[in-house]
Image (cartoon, rainbow, N blue to C red):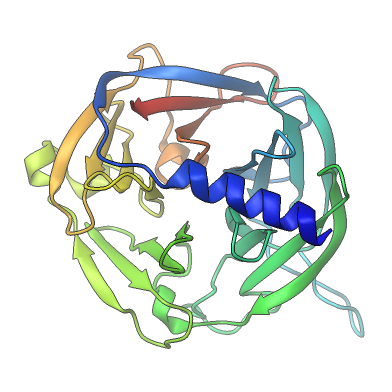
Length: 289
């Protein structure tokens, strides 16, 4: 297991240590994952583990609940798919997921829940948790605690992206252009990034309200979905606008795309296309070359 964890970490860090890249004028489809199992709630986000060649899609939106004397848990599930987009299995670890990512520093699949900041008051099973996998990457129902609530994440519905090199998170704040940089060792944000949306020709109500992706590409680190203009906006870590990549104009994005159904992993921005297929389809778009 120790050797496997080392290989996982080396593979992931090699993939994320990228230099300045070309922004593709038109986003290229890297993968399509038709959902073959009905989401338990809303499809929230996507993670990828290269050694297992698996994608993991987290549902979210059901608060943890339990009867008297019972442990409170959410019925939202996590689903595994292979790199051909074929369904593998699902699990119910018990969390209202908002972010899902592979952490090469711990060699774990980790989730950040709704209300990690306790912005709307205390709720059970809130924080950061690891989700257990089998030796071949299948999902298990078991999990482990990593971190409890932390007010540094700000808004309750934020979907933070993880930077494994600095061990920090980028938590987009709703109804605005602010991104909070979070180090979990601190109870306050490390700093605040103001995205120059005006330079991108966008306003805060055009773009993803809770999510911004981390690409690992120098000078083009932050990746933001512009729902209303069907585009992907790229910024550096100071919030300076770096460029845009256009999504297919025939995509039928809906109001919910402002709040969930996205993710950035395996060098792709993921967008949930609800009208396609029985239960919707996740598109992975390459926007940086």
